Image (spheres, rainbow, N blue to C red):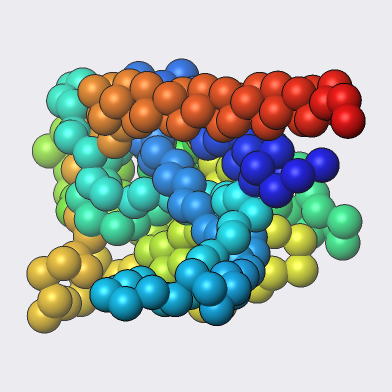
Amino acid sequence: MNHSMINAFVSMQSMQQKLDVIAHNIANVNTTGYKRREASFQDILTNVYQQPAGFEQAGRLTPLGFPQGWGAKIGQIELAMEQAALHSTGNPFDLGIEGNGLFEVQRNSVDANGDPVVAWTRDGSFQLMQDPANPGSMILATQQGDRVRGVDGGPIVVPTNYSIRIDEAGRVFATNHSNPEAEPIETGQLALMRAVRPQVLVNDGSNLFTLPPGVAAEGVLERVDPTTNDANERQKVAVRQGFLEQSNVSLTDEMTELMTVQRAYQLNARAITSSDTLMNLTNNLRA
């Protein structure tokens, strides 16, 4: 197989992966808290061939050598953590995050070591459900029933018949329905994490992110404490009660990228067709 066919074949495989990433983004344009994926390309291998010395002519400005590539591949697929718009819902259990932060949840499953699986999400469409360990209390959970974790690693527990208020720092206050005049009690504080290396996070379904097997959270995620004064405005994180973050996917940008990648895919397909035609002509030559 000649160089042009190898180059086009390898590049077409990478273009197909890029199309899959774009399709996934478009499919989640209306998913709450979804973060789009971005795929970057890199050269596989580039050789430099030297032309004969006879090509050296007076006035030639380009070097004799010319590069011969072997296609491109997907270098990495990274999460784009840019802030998306917050949509007001009026639901006290809907929470949105301003800034680079993630809610921490505990899934209803265990890993290979028998430890609970911890995940992170930007989807703050939560609910109150009954605590299996204490029927007289409620716990904050996702729509799939995964527990929302507090800074102490435990669930956010709210007494039955209490309403909740959550401030910008993620502190949860409960008020008794039967005595609204009573002082609210603080029942916990939401655990918030910042993604330092978002490209390491793995999509675990249900709009949740987990760590790959054998990878520790240190260096990938760091704890965020919104109660402290951060001098760097870009690092500040705030929780907004009654809001949900929309997807940060721009349908216009994704459709533009889709057409660009499709054109590149077609160009490589035509290169294979042209190479096959030339090889067929060569095989049919008669002396």
